[in-house]
Structures are given as C-alpha cells and as structure tokens.
Amino acid sequence: MFEIKPFDPQAYRRQTRRSTMLVAVIFVALAMLLSSLAVMLFGEPGGDNFRFNVGGVLAGVVLTVALVRGPFWSQAWLAPAVYGWQLKRNLMRVTNLMHKVNEQVQANDPSAIKLLRFYHLGLTQMHELDANSSAQAQLVRDMDAHKAKMQALGIELEQPRLDPAWLEAVKGR
Image 1 (cartoon, rainbow, N blue to C red):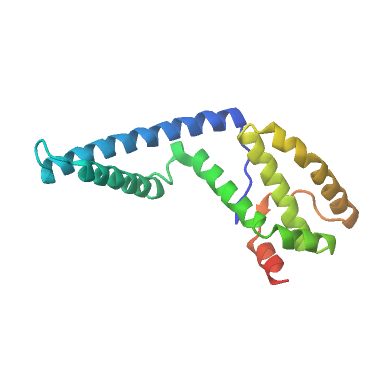
Image 2: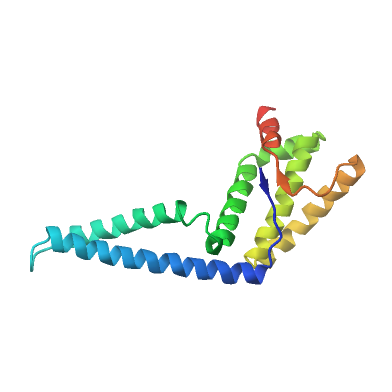
C-alpha cells in the first residue's frame, strides 16, 4: 500500500538532482569503460569499431539500470527519487481508471470518492515537488468541489494511502 509522505520540495529537488547526477556519472563511467574494453578485446586497430562502442554503451545502460533497480534502490541517497517515481506510478494507476472513477464518484461510491481524494492529494504533492504551480492552480477548483462532497457524505478527508482494494472496486464496476 503506497502512502503519501511529507517532503520539503526544495530538499526533494536538491536530493533528486544529486542522485540523478550520481547515476549519470556511473552510467558515463560504465559506458566508457565497457566500450573501451569491447574495442580492446574485439576491435581492430584502425578499423571500424562503431558496433563495439555502441555495444559498450548499451551494456552500460543495462548495467546502470540493474544497479539502480537492484542495490541502489534501497539506499538513502536514492530514496527521494524512488519515492517520486512511486508517487507518479501510483497516480498513473488512478489516471488509467479516471473515467470509471469519475462515473462512480457521481454515483457516490465511497471507494471511488476516497480514491479520487488520494489522487488529488498525490497530484498536489507531485506538483509541489516538481515546482509546477500552474498545473496546481487548475486542480484547486476540482479539489474543493470534491472535498465539499466528501464532507457532505461524512467521509474522512485525509486519504494519504492508496488502498489497492479501491482500485479493484473501481475496476470491477
């Protein structure tokens, strides 16, 4: 179950820039090392070694992805970037069902109402973390209307967790 966690947007952006730069440096180093190694082992002196250079770069991409998704994924220095990725991924899960969510919100389905509230809260945080205030301004009116509906129905406004059962309930109807 994914949960929205509080983050200072400026610290988040600083930490994600740092982790992005570190991953980029690792990729460049691996790509150069593997390309050079491939040319040295399989290439021809003075010949066309383009395919070995490309192969080394592709191997660098694969190895970098494996490092990020493997041992680096649980490291503290990558945690803000991982959180941002998970937030966006979970928001996309809701976005993919938005036509059904909106239909069921109109029918006062509690699961859909809670799901839409989670979506609004998550989207608000994503806009804050990404410093996208123009997109946030467009969302405010919809959020306020939905919040009023939740209050009228007596549904708790704080919905910081994405319950997979809500997604299944919306998909099933």
